[in-house]
Image: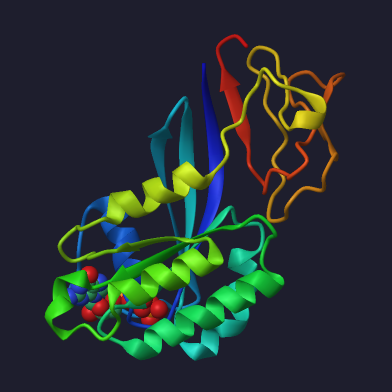
Length: 231
Ligand SMILES: Nc1nc2c(ncn2[C@@H]2O[C@H](COP(=O)(O)OP(=O)(O)OP(=O)(O)O)[C@@H](O)[C@H]2O)c(=O)[nH]1
């Protein structure tokens, strides 16, 4: 049995830190020296295995330029995870990262997984942000942290694997109060686009409309689950 989960992920951070380059490396294994600044946001997907599940990342790469800041809530709202990127050669970008974390804590989804990427680690000879500082900060906010290089394909897969590991697995054999949903053969949970579902909210099952399931206590963050095979 394999569950496919769609996980909305957004990338946030200063302009020029390498958000688009990270996504491009992860999805297409490609690096473009002349990549243009993002206008608004761009969208890509990639599916990776995680234990007994497949995680389909729905990746929203936001524009880092200040004039686009007000659009960000559209992308982090309903996200299962946020990748907040700074450039290890620019201390300012690390300050901006802290502002994003504050905004996420105040206005983002309650259970959002935060992953910090210190990008451009191929330029460590001109680094301004010590890895130790990033690790201490990440620990203080309970975030995953890794230094990456989109250019040299360092730790890009690991960054997304780190997110996957933080997403609690769904257990189709549990039910009710302890947090999972029992589904029959080939049943599909309704998609809850763009908003976390409330605790205990009822979901209709698309293929068996007479049945319903209760959401786990911590909500599902807009996750669509397709169970294949027999439960
Ligand atoms: N040396 C090095 N350069 C990188 C790396 N990642 C990105 N760059 C370069 O940094 C510049 C900005 O990269 P982008 O991916 O456009 O940055 P961004 O954060 O998406 O920028 P916005 O779209 O404006 O928010 C480009 O010239 C990239 O080629 C990296 O890992 N190492």
